[in-house]
Image (cartoon, rainbow, N blue to C red; front, side, top):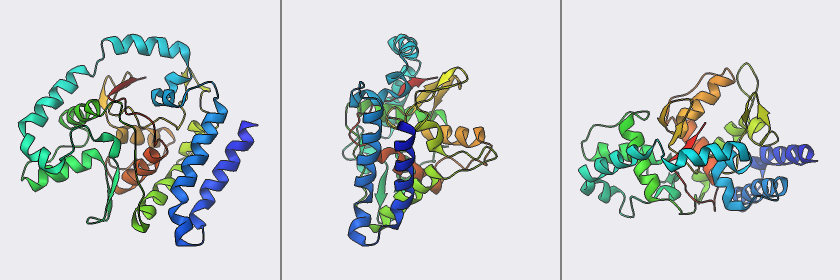
Length: 277
């Protein structure tokens, strides 16, 4: 039953970009959100909505026990402290760029009309540093991830609220959605193959996490990496796993993908930084 529902949803989402009039198109993200969240609520009726923010640990109770033990002495804790120091070092600069911050992660990614592009937190940090004539961080660097970890920690409990407010923003959202549902690589997989119908199933020894809740906990300390890393590092890894050419972290394509990917998690609480396998 769920497979049939899943592929009905996929067909609708893939066709949704062809809605005829402008008003209908601006309603597209709202309709997508209701459909995607409704699917996972129906598929896993015993899981409270907020629990999806814990990713695969909302589904796999054995893995959850190990995760909860790790969270008692989290390996990302030192990064939060380092990130706070980095924020305070240029506090006046960051406060000018982020007057509501640092607890602002739930509002990103967002569409910037002036730049005509999607702005993620790491991208916004480097824009801010560039305006202040400060050296920009490498997007995969310890400094960037520590600063974002501090921002995420300050944002904990705030509900994700990503907006798609005009036609230009909608085009970026649709580009991200198209990427998510497009097959690629030698394995001919799309993102949804693992994280919709196969969510909660085993791939070798690992449980596959649901798409709902995947963006709440970044940056994440992954045991596989032995380090804290950003969502775009995971995108890079996923592309490699299906044997597709990866893109650069914070490329326009990945920022658009994050825009769609995070929008589907609207209403879930930020709980990053976090630990994942």
